[in-house]
Image 1 (cartoon, protein in one colour):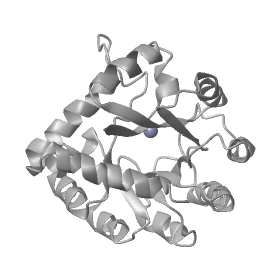
Image 2 (cartoon, protein in one colour):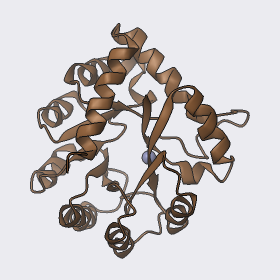
Image 3 (tube, helix red, strand yellow):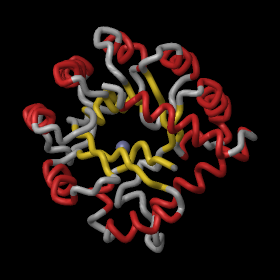
Length: 244
Ligand SMILES: [Zn+2]
């Protein structure tokens, strides 16, 4: 079973009939999605869809103008047990002044802590600062699409409550060291981060990018895909902590 551990399916549904995409992707082994809501409308779409293959998170993004979710919305969704995690939230070097980002980030980590939820992280720059904040909140973290510095990666990877997604972003030649380190850490899942905007004009099913990603990782790492899938499944289990 293949899991898309970070995507924006509600957003994608503005361009595609989602059920058709999901059914086809299932034939390729993609059976679960950790998807994100960044707007009130997207949260509503997931609730209406109520598809067992999709779990969604919600959060106030540090640097996305169209995000109209507020901290209160995240609390309400957590109270109603609608979301599997808080996110994507975090810090972004292109966003508003850092103190403002920090306050919003901490307020949402507090929600995750209150409700015992994992956190989906968007970290662009500010890695040291993010770590200083995260260490105050011992939660389960999924750092999505990490493509930052190698030393910061190594620091994060040492913690047993932090997992990562492998995205197209680190399949580039200038990121091979980071890709290798991510594979060596054994703490990876796979993501497409697909949105309507990322989908190409004639792309029939952008969810299938995950299958391509997996085969590229297999070729790069020389680890058979059955083993990659097993590691991913174990990490998924721990991240969602089904034992609770
Ligand atoms: Zn995303």
